[in-house]
Length: 137
Image: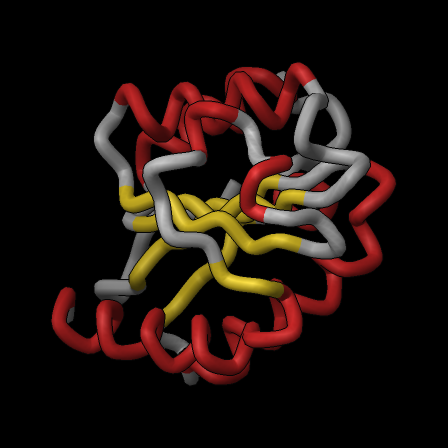
């Protein structure tokens, strides 16, 4: 896992394994738009062979400035995704739900109080994120 550096705004991107293609599209898009100011943790790219997966995830959630969770039919009931949401909640992280083909009423109970963004409106979320990252610098 890369260490925090250069005042980067850190995002933890939570998703189910079956949604990894979407996550692998979103993460570089966020970083590209962030122009070096934003760094996205994504397990597929940031956990190396031999690293302890749980420790890497826990540490990345602790270090993140913002927690993004891709909520889909595949992820909304997955134990690991729910565990990650709970960890972010317990650490009082900013939690952003991104929905993909589910209704707000289908989101996990812990996500109900949070305004979510539909994956189709991801550009809107990106713009808001970049404003938050600029303020954090």
